[in-house]
Image (tube, rainbow, N blue to C red; front, side, top):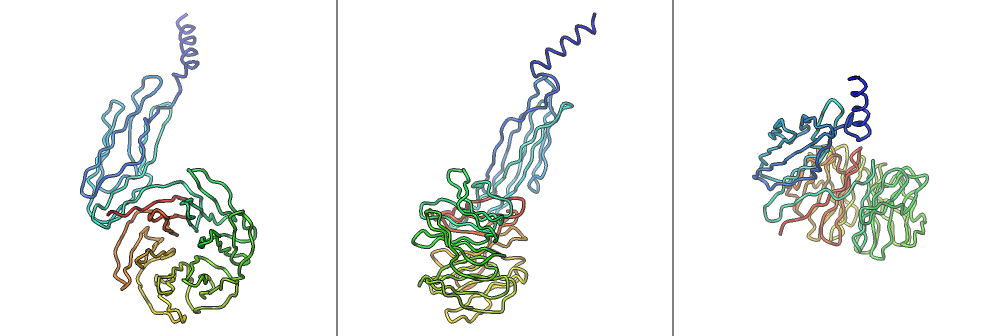
Length: 356
């Protein structure tokens, strides 16, 4: 008789969803703390059957301590260091019972509060393997995912903007007319995509990567073959400066000097308008994407080390932010913020905002 009652009670619990269900964490969300401050994050979990979950924290920032209070709640305490902005990805909290687990991963940001410092935030989830990023005049984001597709990201929703069958898109650039230039690495060259989605081959440049324009409308492209190409507004192609080792990034300053990165050698060169290069910086690990602001300050994504560096026009270096996984490409938006695309399995897009 007792076993029959137990079976009936168990069946009722299953029907009510109270038995055999994993615990549930309350939503946590990304957190930020100012440099030198202390971050406290409360964590709470419940189980449908009343079991008290055990709680744990993993991939915590250095020095952070997580405590399970034993009543279904826990807390993370982190004393933030001072200095440039920091990003801690995949800080993970887990609730466990015999019936299962629930977990949530968040970002923890440490904000540089100095005047002229930069604050980093997660903007959106992009595409795995993305290498190109650009923003149009309205601030809409575009991503090249290295899988034949250029994506348009508006309001958090992605849609296909252009397909590049036969080439892997790796560099994106808008001109003043709103046309998008796309470098098709391992493909026929550089495409031009009109706002009405019309796509044409603009220039036959071998293995192009990042792109930029000078004041006369000439387009510059870094080729993995080692040469920097110049393409006139009419599509005429010539070698502008030869002989580099695996160049990736290209950026043109207000005086039409062309900056390029050598990915494997860790160098940055500045090339004068006549095509003569001089070494601008060295000792980086794997610099890829570069971009210049209105004051000709050069921003560099050092991919292997997860760094964003800033060089003034004289070559003085400073650290903007660190901790992002595989930062590869950057673009300034019309809002003045710096947008960063990360590659690898991350596929994250971050936005960097400068302090007054």
